[in-house]
Amino acid sequence: MNAQTEKFHIDGPVGKIECALDRPDAATPVRGIALVAHPHPLFGGTMDNKVAQTLARTLVQLGYVVYRSNFRGVGTTAGTHDNGIGEQDDLLALIEYMRAQPGQHDVPLVLAGFSFGTFVLSHVAKRYLEAGGAIERMVFVGTAASRWEVAPVREDTLVIHGELDETVPILSVYEWAREQELPVVVVPGAEHFLHRKLHILKRIIVEAWR
Image (cartoon, rainbow, N blue to C red; front, top):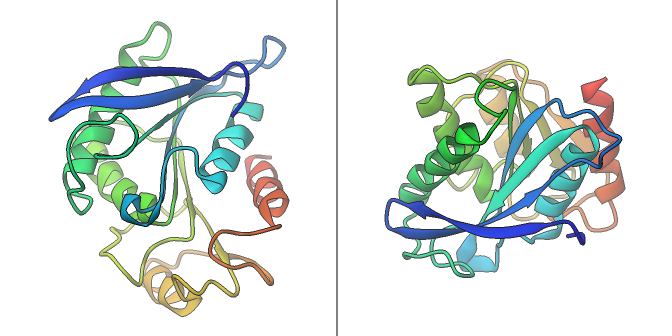
């Protein structure tokens, strides 16, 4: 991602979890921490996916210390794909690790996911909030509403979707969002991976944070 990216491992429920950490530059005030979740591992998804990296890079520029991790069986993360169930436990373990770092115990937390990562994060957020945790905001890109049971999310969640998404048809996202009266930001002409539209994704997030 950049020369300052730190790669490391933490202990997870079934073994080591491979993680990456990016920090704002020295001139940018730190405003919180963020976790980015990547797309489906059985279809090539990793924490270095270009959409996941764009989410991370944008949040770093907004002042967040950003963590990413590989799901089970990806890279050097232990375990095998668990259909998003064990993956929730792993992300909760990473959030616990993030909160345990100096100065990060009570700072704002942002959760951002792409595709399969939105499904996992929706349930992570639900469990984390039920356990008494606090989340500043969530960002969902390519919300996987047509393929998995994405949990309801908070009303201030930023939902971004490509108009021409062939992997997750936008109508399924509308159906998921409609029950929650949740706005959806549509990127015209964009497919699932937002090819040649990542600059628009970044702009939408930055403007939402204003």
